[in-house]
Amino acid sequence: MAAEPPVLPGTDEARRWAAEELSKPEYREAAPSFLDTLWRNFLDWLQSLDGSRGDAPSIPGVAIAIVIAAIIAAAIILARPRLNARTRQARDVFEVEDSLAAGDFRARADAAAAAGNWGDAVVDRFRALVRNAELRTVLDPQPGRTADEVARALSVQFAAEAGSLQWAAATFDGIRYGNRPADSGQYRDMVGLDTRLEAMKPASAGSAGTVPAP
Picture 1 (cartoon, one colour):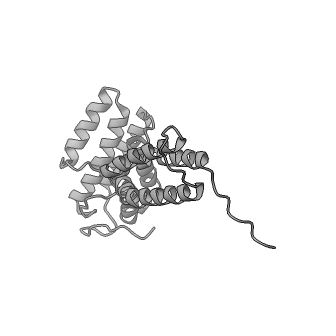
Picture 2 (tube, rainbow, N blue to C red; picture 1 turned 30 degrees about the vertical axis):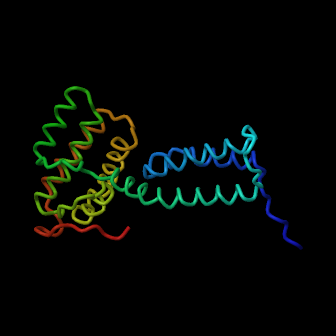
């Protein structure tokens, strides 16, 4: 069977495709600033094709489609590294400026719990758990470590708490980065896990945990 020829958009449809694709927030938020200028100039160019200007040239739909494809490809290439870096940073356990001790995180968590701010309380208690593991050299301090990486590494050292650690990591990410609500029960469970881990002896005492392959 002979292959059907590709469908080429008309001028109006090509403009609509471009507007819908490049108006997506990921392009506008992640792209470098010069791409915003390119976007505005491109919109002005599209408006010039609607026949409102008497001297506007007539450009066939296939040429417009090629230009649109080139701009979309450039936007994807420029935006993807920034989106990946942002996603990576958004999952870090600690903020860039966090240098608090485990006791400081626990005190901050208790204060948040007393005020009924359960989300902040759960997040800071998990951070206390991680910072305490670093202090005990169960975990090697590592900038950019994610909650999931913490759970995997600590599960090697505290196998009996592997399920609780996976729950704690998922709860931390859900509250901190997924805007999920928290409650007093989650805080009590996080406190219990932190307390149990502190009282347990790691499988390889004195040796910092590493993250196993997923």
